[in-house]
Length: 275
Image (cartoon, rainbow, N blue to C red; front, side):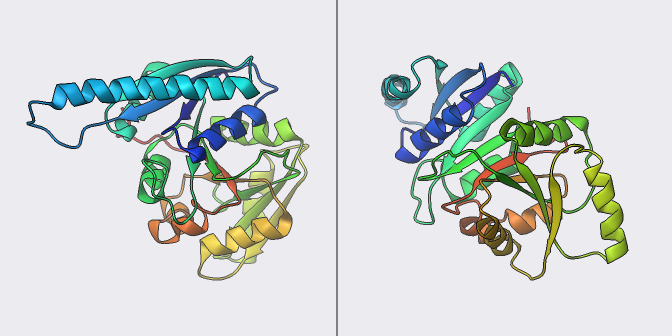
């Protein structure tokens, strides 16, 4: 990993996610880009360009203030500032096309979130539409080296080696135990074959499989993470139906906006409309 995109709207939630990521990755020699977006929701006014210029000035001013705060804690961090005009998803997609970041960091607030892009359906849209690995940090989370990492799996095998490598790198980086969790759907014979196939990708990593039963997938996964005291949850978006059972607007506040669990979201297939 060499290049990390940090999203900010200058809120405490976004700042906390950035601090979390810098603390988490402090052993790495990385290059960061701190990105703020601004946009206009109206057109046809003679004052549009004036408003746009004012928003651009405020965005850049906010980025400089954020950089000062961050450098107090991480004085050696290499951070570039980027003020971008346009809708958030389009801005992220252009950054990916132009710079190909290894990781994108965003913060999410609790169930009472009323912030610019760090809540509900917008966070869901980022996770659903951006295929770069995402680090999703809930409000108030403080980084601590995870002893256990939960992997929510549909038991399907991986489609590309990059995702396998990413999971291995995360687990080995922390020397953590990998806990695979699945909501029961298939029979025992199919489960055994799937387990062996998945485990073959993770030699020399302490791993175990765990099975849950019930309809509320998001709540069951959250409860399991709490019971195990895991520090990070990994989600792979290669099976839309299973992924949407966990990451869905109706259950967002249980997992996506859950106040405890940091998520790493990986994509095992290319999203064709990302450009």
